[in-house]
Image (cartoon, rainbow, N blue to C red):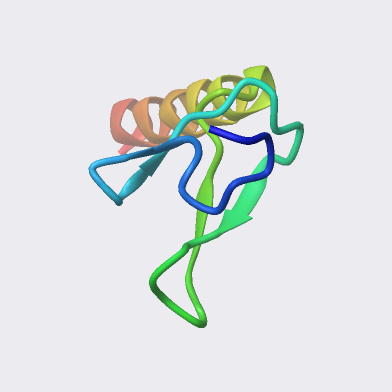
Length: 62
């Protein structure tokens, strides 16, 4: 596929994984007001780990 093609990086139409795309937040292709995270970006994984750790800490404290 050409670089920048609209469907490049979409897995099953719901998950976006494209290491060549440097954006962290990506607009969903089928929805006007919906966004998703580019799982091909290393900062997305860092964000998920931080959020997961916060949830675990809250669960332990409560």
